[in-house]
Image (cartoon, rainbow, N blue to C red):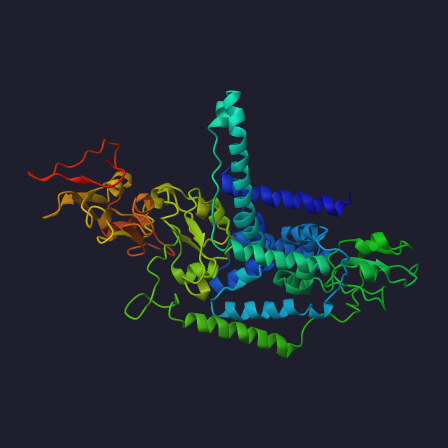
Length: 539
């Protein structure tokens, strides 16, 4: 096994380990978002769209400095996206494989770079559609992780009879939660297409589509150290035929397109004359082969297209731009993670990597489709019917690489209100069907739901005290009403701050959150002469 392959596999293992650390909450000391901080396009366009520069962006500055010296080495040695596609591309998927370079399309990555730049100038981040580290984190966190959890749970089910027979109590009662996520079908189709392209055209993503590759290519057009061919070269052209990035032309194999060269060393290994050497200090004569840079007007047109796309999103009906008020349409069920920035700032920073979704211990965080408009595509939102939000959990903010979700101290976290519960009387078992049910009161950690008797109703009915409700979703999650719960959390009253104290803001708004003490719940006595019924399953 070559040294490059060892480095590749080590970095892929490190990436997966850090993702597992985020999911399993191993330790706050692990830099679980390290690889995301190394993505040039993710960092650049987040900084431009959010108008912010963070200290956590320092790793990408170091990477770009190293690229000026060593060339585009990150793509072939460190990037988990490139490694994953390269390994999957080596599978024997189709008989009679015929490789094609499609190198005439390599300019597309620069047009995509211009599109992303145009959007970021208006404060809109489209980087999630093509950031390699965001995409690969989403692939492993939202697609591979649920599948592995499901298979592991099935394995336990198969082994349970054997464990019972051998009295292995630990294995008999062990359970593995299997998270479920929306948009999995899209993720599968997207990566299946990339794998097929990789199979027939090696490194197609890196050469043609990757905006981070475009940035690294611009920084490595004239590296200080790179490929050099000695006079022993016989112009056989083998290096040009095997180069996955098509950085070598068959007619001029001694020259190198350094902006496309990823220092994979494939040409050095294949050379029969051993005429190719890495690394070598290069002269400053520049790149002898014309690059794949598009014409200036095409790049400007791509940037203008990004501006138009951003402008159309900002002026759309569901746009987060502007203040709430008359004429502003917002999705009724759009619940953001606790301590999320205000919507426009949140969307400009969120890179849709899926780290928060995979790390959520109750699986309540789900990626959106178009509920929040085009700008909110794939962004995270709470789904209380799927799972409640633990009132003292800070896992989503801990793993967020860009600060779209603010990391709060424990005393502040309690006051990060995500919404307010609302009772739909026409669905409620107590209000509409006059059946006794107190589930929402029993599960509420803050005693925000209380029951009282209503004239003409033999059973007590629930009402929500808004000043006590944090929007955690326990009530909605455990409500026995099927399909849509009779009590639903809406974003009304949510506290989302770019700066300042959540505790002080909540106090100014008259909120009064306090965890209830453990107690035995008793059914309130019914008025004389009336016999309360019970909801199905509660008798």
